Image (cartoon, rainbow, N blue to C red; front, side):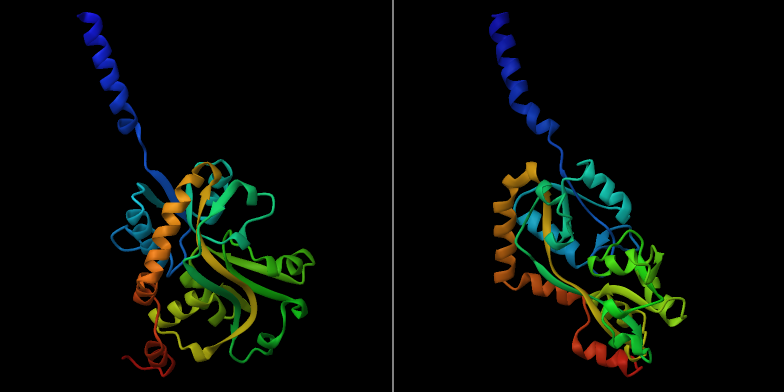
Length: 261
């Protein structure tokens, strides 16, 4: 009888143990408005955050959302201490690292440009023609389109940890240009009431699609993640979330005209 009882208890413990030990996947990203940022209640928000939350909920995947500075994020990815990076692009991944990850179908398209003061003729120049130019960038970010210019010391960088400080650096003439995502530029110009007419878009740095990136060992999660993204796209949910954060044409017109609407 004791042997039978022991076997029953052992089987019961074995059945419940995996559930008890199950840990949520760590889903991380760096903060860059309006895609990922921490609000005044210390809650992660943004276009990518809200999309990812809905994707994982729909796919029944338990995740813990965290954010890290870009440099620390890369170190943790290299050490495989992060399971998922939910705002990534295959084009941002080095050839050496590409085999470590798998990517979902894209959920958002982004473009990145240099931005100059409106009266700066350098805004018409390609990156290959830039000389003695200082570019404002978020600390830890890299742009492949600028790699050669940095290596040849034709341009230098001034880094900041705050995305909201980029246009201030440009307005105060501390840099000649800033590198940022177009949606981020529109967001900053609108939410901080900066007149977009003071700035001008320059050379294209990158055109990418944002996806959810997973370590290879989690590739089995991809079918559910892809199905959720495609369903949200079909229902217009991806566009609805994007529109909730990013300025529409009428809002941009109000800011450009220097008035409150």
